[in-house]
Image: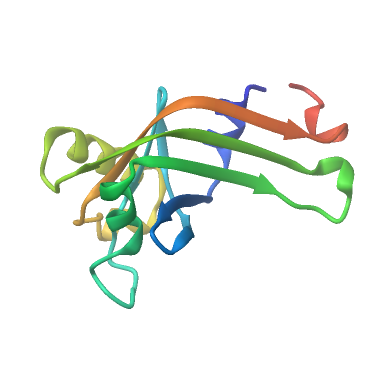
Length: 139
């Protein structure tokens, strides 16, 4: 299994950005299309609508995403990482609509209420992964 396949199969990832005050990491749901990872600002409660991840990406578009699996059986551990450059898509833009369609297909929670906020598109330049012995079975 390639790093991209392992990443794309995960249900949640962490998005890391960098700001003036250091790194910022948040869990996200996402969809993968080729070498682009999409994440949308949705209706889940947030402390503010001025999201730090968006401000950070506007100032410095470098982004890292990490998906992983932990198990008490350490033979089943794995992680997959996507490093790239982010673009922030305005709601309603053609690529943003395509991304929301992918997210809606992937997550049942979005079918009743699709994301309406900006969409983060990370153009992945490097996929990397690691898996313990048993996690590589069948790959």
